[in-house]
Image (cartoon, rainbow, N blue to C red; front, side, top):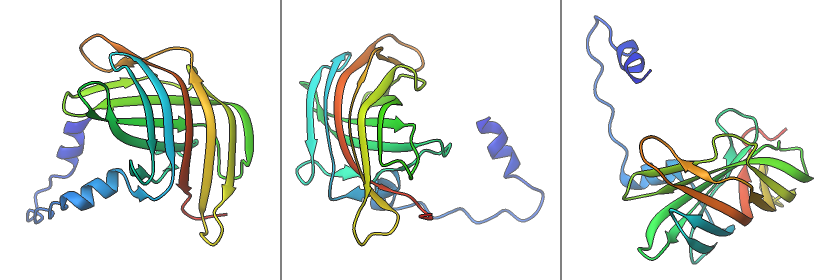
Length: 185
């Protein structure tokens, strides 16, 4: 598929100028737009074993937003974990829409990335984790922004993606995030 993308960009005309690479700040903000609020408290067991307590402003968090598939929201958290204190990114996909104010037993997915080692762990679906209790309310004076909070768990681990062995069980997690919904209804 990657080859198709590159081939589709080729044509017989004059070559297009090379795009200007983004600065590291631009790239970091594109992957994790900063948020001054939010937290992740979670227990990780397995290939990464840690009790996470990542809270703003001590551990800056990312602004949440719609999943690329538009079937819910994606929350992204990052911070140090484990005895080696490598940067870990935890992504939680939640199957809710903007109009949901309260919900129970909401399907969720979890992805854990250990930077510096190229390790990706994923539940690969919304059937292994759930949000027990979820609430979402508009942020006063910020059209399209909502404060989401919830408590969840996974019944099966996030398994390593690609070659290799290993898994990470996120047995419990508490989250809060600011979620940006473009085009507030």
